Image (cartoon, rainbow, N blue to C red; front, side):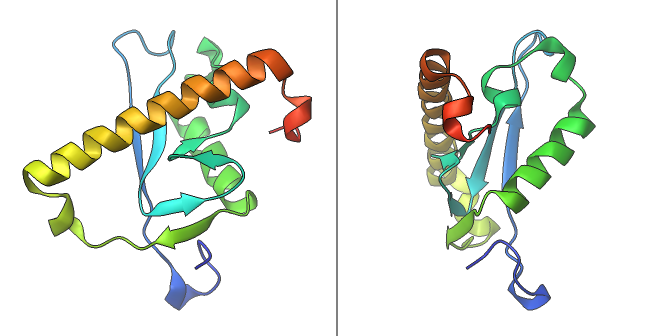
Length: 128
């Protein structure tokens, strides 16, 4: 499924944003929690965006950040691999464990993206 090919095919996307106590001096953790989204620029929910990987305090305007994330997802070729199974699946202990696992997986993906771009720069990744 595409993220939004037609009005009847819209799939809700749950984007999680975790802010540290010293935001905007340290980056927020931003990731797609549900559904599973596949793209050459999305890794375990983490978004390969320069502003999220190489964070600068001046990026701290949350509204601008969300607008850029929306544009990024719309133009990244992202596709839904699995649809949301409803809010009931996210409730309870199993849902909390899954949410923690998703957050930890996205955090590790951002660490790998940061290491990659620190070594290779951004031009080798198509400027994303």
